[in-house]
Length: 194
Image (cartoon, rainbow, N blue to C red):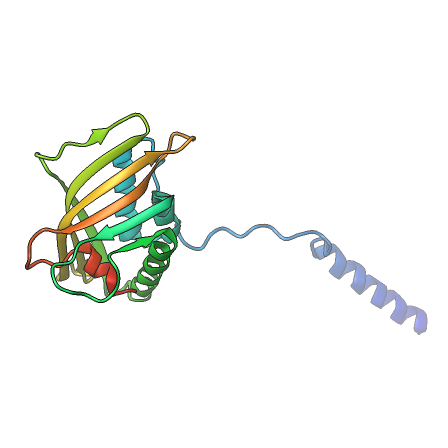
């Protein structure tokens, strides 16, 4: 009787053990649950602006960070007296953009950000060996899922870019200017998340 119980127990252990994977091996990597967004290798200054636009529309902070140089500075003008300063650095820019993207990701069903850049014919791109200056008009729109515009921000952005040792371009300085006295600019949109 004892032999029979021992044999049944031994058979059960062998049967279960042969069905299971090696308990001491590491598990397989899981595939990402979300798409990382679109990022184009920035081999030209204009590609950085496209990556900036895509990072906002896709709300991917990692792609946004890749657009910025480590010595990045954001500056903006004021038409009316507004609390806060008119310049901030890389870490502050990343912090407020992360906060903004998190809020929009939480409300992704209800809100989206779209950005359109426009060429200014009287402001041609200045491209040098390792630096560039690009000036664009822009419209940043916050829309609902049906495309109804909830808020618009208009202005002129001056982007100073640098080329790294890996031949990739990034934003060193971003200056935001109001298009006119009646329009809110990108800086006002950003300042709401400070």
